[in-house]
Structures are given as structure tokens and as C-alpha cells.
Image 1 (cartoon, rainbow, N blue to C red):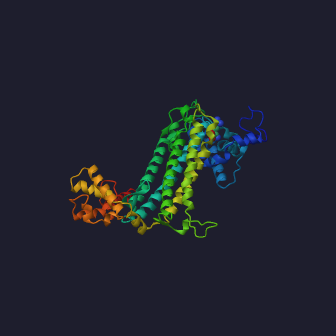
Image 2: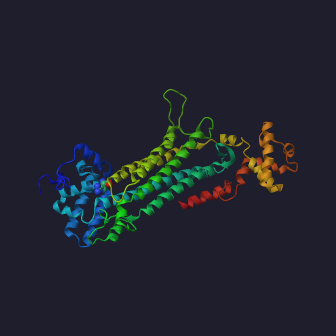
Image 3: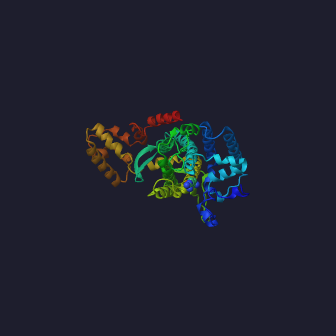
Length: 463
Ligand code: ARG
């Protein structure tokens, strides 16, 4: 063993010269994938335990390797580990250090495996815990939204289509639309979790191995349902990466839409929600300003998530099987998307806790724009045996009349209404009441107060 063997690259016998500093820097990924050290060590421990069980390595060597790996884990945890660029990535950094700690027997660790299966094993294990973190954060948002909704079953606001007053709704019902969006996000992540639940370890470089390994054993040890089926597909597959990036994109798109909505509602034109000073920023020139900067930033962050999804799709496009270095950037991309989303989810939850409806303005706005016109049309269908289209026409005439007289629908007298529909009786007037309107939407999924209360109970039970 030459003195500086540990500093030489693993392939130095074959490749006689070293990469220039620039090339070394370009090709290595240690700054990014050192994040996977725990997963890499867990994978290696499962691997050598399996090698021992299969009588491929001795008891003594297995124990020595595990001892060394645990020592390395501690060193990294205590920031005493020196990551070296010339060892390229986390896998070779750890292997090289293992040689320093336990000597030549470290050479047995890479029996029957390759970095190609090693890296995806690490990555999948990492993704499992990242999905757990993300879904826990989503749960927190659902919880915050639900408690805001519980306090606002009776809060009436205009529901919009095209940002024009459409029909009145309960603010709680609106907030619970957000809950549905986040619940779908959770489902999507769980689906990805399910899909990635196959163990790549043991497919080695691309063909599998001639050693009598037991992939079911490592699957169990590492918490995977089963081993992957095809060695070539395994080292080439990054579908789980795309799934994750898509999930992140959709979730950040949801946050973006909600942020935009809150920005609009907080604007001086709408004033439907109040934001506490805790989440607002000022202007350097306009002393009066209170800006929802952070919501705007949340709205914008979806941009980088989409970008990351498209980067990965583009890297994979046209890439032949099996492993190519192109794939190395998958981690940089995922870590960036993950960190951004985790941060956005935390910030968003904090912002939600500092939002309150401006009930008076919500009601005022809901009283504008002939918002109960559809209720009148429905009333005509139910009580005056008209077809919906006929009732719609009659209601449109009434709205035209009100507009001409500069009156709201509830300011029209029975006599005025009778000019258009002569048979109308006094009880038609109740359809213009906003509470009645909201409460009449009793069809499943509608905004009636009873429906909302039932849904709140349902959500609370689900948690
Ligand atoms: N650092 C590499 C990556 O992340 C590990 C796999 C390297 N395999 C190889 N044959 N160069 O993709």
C-alpha cells in the first residue's frame, strides 16, 4: 500500500493522470449529495449484513465495516468529516474514509453493488422521509385552515366567477376549498411514496450480480416492499423524481393561487381580509404602505418548482438506458424543490394564522352585483312551474329593470317584480336574503351551513 493511496482515486491504476481542478470541480457532486450520508450508511450496513448472511463476507469483516461506517456517521454528524472533491461524491468519500479507519478490509464493502444502485437507494430512502415532512406540514396548514373555517361558518362573502360577484357563499366553505386542494396534494405524495417502494439495491451497475445476494433481505432491512424487477430499468429510472417534482409543482401552484387570492382580497379595492402587521412590510418611500410582500413571494415561488420539473424532464428526454452522468443533477434539482416547498409551507401556515376576514366588507360586497339572481330563477322554477331557461329570462328582465332603477334586487317592491312576473307573491322576497341563499345550497358539497358543519366534523375526524 503506497503512503498516499487514500488520496488517490479508486480508478487510479487504470486512469493514469488526474483531472484538472476545473474538470474535477465540474464532475463532482459532493457538495450536493453529502446530504445523503445517513441514507448511504444505512444502505451500506444493510448491504454488508446481507453479504455476511449469504456467506459472501466473513463475520469479522462485516463487523469491522459496520464499526467503520458508524464511526463515519458520527464524524459527519459532528462536522469532523472532511469531504473531498477528488472523491467525487458521498459514496466514494465514505468508502475512502472507511479504508482509513479499518484498512484493506474496507475493500469488501462494494462487493456486488455499484454506485448506480447505491445512489438511487439512498435517494429513495431520503425521499421517503422528505415526503413525511411535507405531508406533516400540509397537515398543519389543513389544521390552521380548519380552525379559521370553524369560526366563520356564518361569515357571508361573495363567491366569484371571473372575479365578478356570482353567488353568495360562506367564508368557511371557501376556506374548505383550500383544504380539499391540500388533501389532494397529500394523496399525490402518498401515491409517489407507494410507487417508489421498490428496492434498487443489488442491481449493481446495470445487470445484477453473479454473487448470491438476497435482495429481499435488503429490501426488508431498508423498509422497501420488494426489490425492483429489472436491473437495467432500475439504474435508468427517475420516474419517482419526476413524480416528486410534479407533486411539488402542483402543491406550490395551490399555494400560489391562494396567495394571489389573499393579495386581491387584501387590496384597497376589495378589503375583504385583514392581515396582521406581523406579516406585512412597508415601503422605503411611501410611508403609508402596508404590503403583502410575503404572499407575493409565495405566489412567485411556484416558478422555480415548475422550472425544476422541466429541467428534469429535459435531462431525461432522449437519454438512452441505462446510467449516464446526466442523471447526477437529479439530486440538486430535487433538494432545491424540496427546500423551497418546505419553506413555503411553513411560511404559508404562519401567514394563514395572521389572516382575518373583514366580515362587514364581505357582506357589503356580497350585497352588490345582483348576486341572488340565480336564487330568483330557481324560485320561479320551483314555484311557478317554469322551465329553468324561461325563469332565467324573466330574472334577467328583472335585473335589467333593477339596474335601470338603480336599485338592488332586495330593494324592489312586490309590485315592481309583478310587472315582469304577475303571479308573484310576497314570499318571493326571501330569496334575496343572503343567508337564505347560502343556506339553500344543500346539495352535497354545497355551501349550506349544515353541509359546512358536517364537513368540518368530517375533517376533524379524519385527522
Ligand atoms: N454521483 C453519481 C450520481 O449521483 C453516482 C452514480 C455514479 N455512477 C457512475 N457510473 N458514474 O449520479
